[in-house]
Image: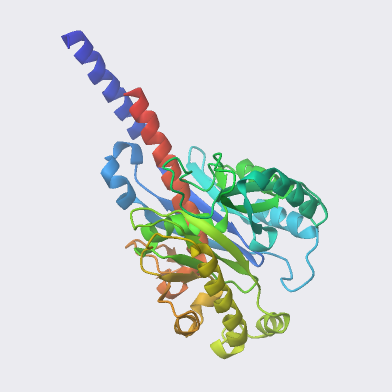
Length: 385
């Protein structure tokens, strides 16, 4: 290499370094929109472009958490006002950004706004039509937005590696389909963008939870169950080893019975619910988790990692739920706990470990925003070098 070429290469590297050092540090935000509240969690780094690639994951730190109550009666009949009330609440109460601040965001919609099903790859077009009809005849009055991914690992090495790739699979392969209202998704994403956030993606709950579980908890589960008062889901990890995770079969889980929700609404905040209050419902949930696990594994010849069930959500914080689920499912159960050393302050106290499971979804969304952004930037940097 000539001295001129060498000098030019060094100059380009220095220019990239100066640009990286001058860029505002990025924050990655997960916005989990639920029925009762919106949970906003941020994780961030220093200037990640100036860090070595090997340091990037360890550099992520949990910075903040904000819970925004929604002015919706969660036990009332759903109405079209839900969507507008959610948008109005975002406009009024979503934390404001600072000029020049770079905030990359992933978001999820309420589980009650989502529909999961399993179909074959050659039936995806019909599935779109069916989902369009479903959401048009609902409170949303809208076509459906679909994402789909393989239920199981295929033998072919060309199988899609992320649930949002939507690459053409073999025609008889089983596909998991997650659908929601297209108009609601667009309105909410546009609202969040207008407030200074950069909406990177709308993710199905199972995809975010499964893909981020090991990085955020140091546990590589076979399945993740999100158990909330108003409904949840169970998602299977279809990856055959611990090096990475791939979301497979997802199934919605029902809300607590109406009487129990009424009891929760009428009780003092300090009282809450006990294991006895929810045990019959929990028994049904356990049966659904077992059935989902068996259905996901049918015909499989791969030996999966230890069959750990990772649980998160409101109900996961109730004392005794983990041990009860372990007995009912005959699976080892772990409650979702953030494994990082950095925790946000709430008032004068750090965020309590016992309530980590209630922000598992928003943290997973923030983590996925970070991983996708950093992967894109690394690819761009490599292409320009």
